[in-house]
Amino acid sequence: MKSLKISLEMAQKVKEFVTLTQACDYEILLKSGKYVVDAKSILGIFSLDLSKPLTVEIYSDDCAELLAQLQNFAA
Image 1 (spheres, helix red, strand yellow):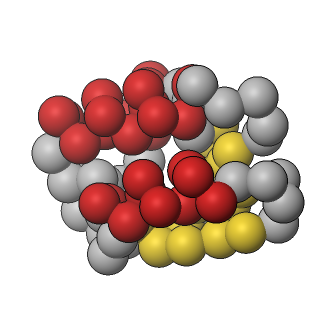
Image 2: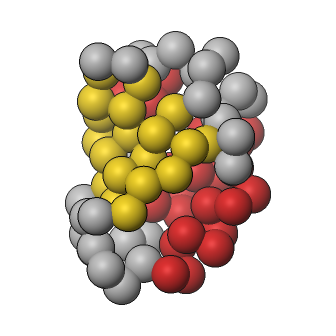
């Protein structure tokens, strides 16, 4: 498992993030405090407090390309 902190304060950023994660075959979760949602679910993401940094958890060892793309969202 790999994890990193990101920020999704604007709706456009959420849309870009979901587009990236939906292209992956492995499980990706997004955490905000005690809440956890599927990172491929735009409705799930909008249910979180987006004013604070979020933690992305990627359950794959072959995710270097996704990690590089997610640097655009780094908090």
